[in-house]
Image 1 (tube, rainbow, N blue to C red):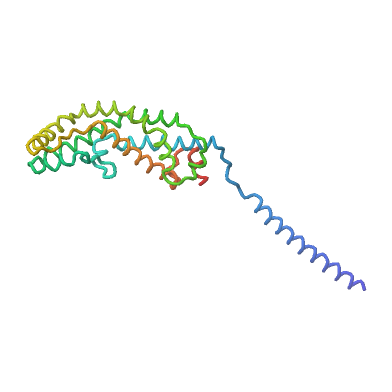
Image 2: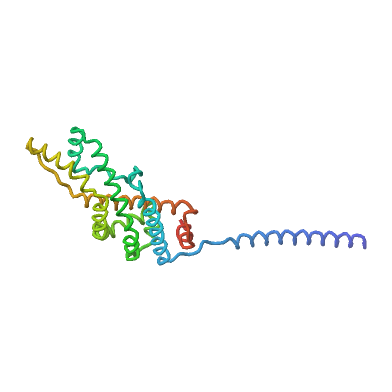
Length: 245
């Protein structure tokens, strides 16, 4: 009888030990689940600040890349072509053997843009700071280029008005008109003989609009980098806001 009692007690202790071990394992498993970190909650104000910061980074990079020799001329995406409204001038000039003059004009056209965008950074920066945004989350979730498109829609006319005088200074500095005048004279002389319509497109307006469009294109590319590449999120705020996507 005594032997049976001892055996029963030994079996009971072993079973209790097994149950205790299983309960401990379950407890550890539950603990690992409850300690899973959660993403930090974003406020609309933080999102708006992050979007503006992304645009500022994009503008700075875009200006640094384009406000140099061949920044426009050597970039096929933003290179200024011969003005579309004056393609007849180009065709007639080439027919008259003025190939060098046409090439010099197109080069100088892009030099004017490269010179003008040196003044763009403070203009764009102020536009970004003054930009009114109601729903930052809508832009954040809007996909590639959404912040750039919003900035363009909100500020294009303001930027054009501010940028045009800088372009006029730049076209004067690189003597754009001096390259344009011989082409225009030859073309208009030919039109006088044939009775065709003379052309005198506004070069300053053309350079201004194309320079702004080129910068916005490059800003969009910078924004898209920040959206998809964590390494491009160069501040804590950018990492927090765009890391939530």
